[in-house]
Figure 1 (cartoon, helix red, strand yellow):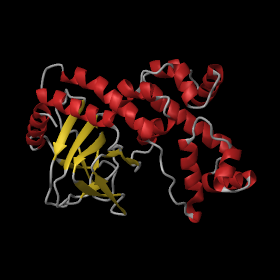
Figure 2 (cartoon, one colour; figure 1 turned 135 degrees about the horizontal axis):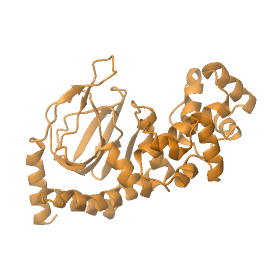
Figure 3 (cartoon, rainbow, N blue to C red; figure 1 turned 90 degrees about the horizontal axis):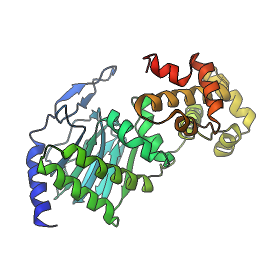
Length: 316
């Protein structure tokens, strides 16, 4: 590491203690849970945080922002999903979470150094999501909190051999530590390049399915395959006959497959129209309509307005 980068790390390590790490109550939570509000200034859309060792077990908490952690050295254990899973972060690991994805850091007992990129959700949707639209897994990861505010998915993989990710992290640290007036403008292209590189790696792992909750698993599957979900595809994925899938969904949700798919597509369309500057034609393709006119027809049938009328009505 060069001297300039090392100096930048030290500057940001000192700044860590000056940020607002107040834990607040979570609106709508009945479990006395806590979350970190945006720790930077209101005029900052992105902040870069450098953190060293901690001797205390953190309280389980959530965040109101997206975070992307990179371990520069050492190792750090994280407890996630309400202490149900322990994740060990080693040098070169990326660990990223959605807003409200909860965790707690365990005392490392070693020389850990972690750099975090924190991004406000609306900025991520409007400034970065359009450029990530070709990476379906990444788009689903970023958008799931829009319809499930307690989504618990995380990204975790090792990128120690990826020199681009490390270089981008070093550039972001150095730029943010400079503290110049144009720092936010300079950070955005670096963050976009970083997110694109992460998207190349990210492929969600399949979770073990519980037979007594198969309908919920099918609903999540539909959400993750919003653009191309089909009854036959679901049957093949879960090992059931399509007729069984139909009857199960109807029994558990009161809706048939077509109604569920339409509902999820329309909710995703609203999230995209609300949170991004994507053209309606692009949104229609991302939610599974190869013909924009079919999307307009479905949207109007669902909301009694065209996408443009809905946007202009102020209901988004």
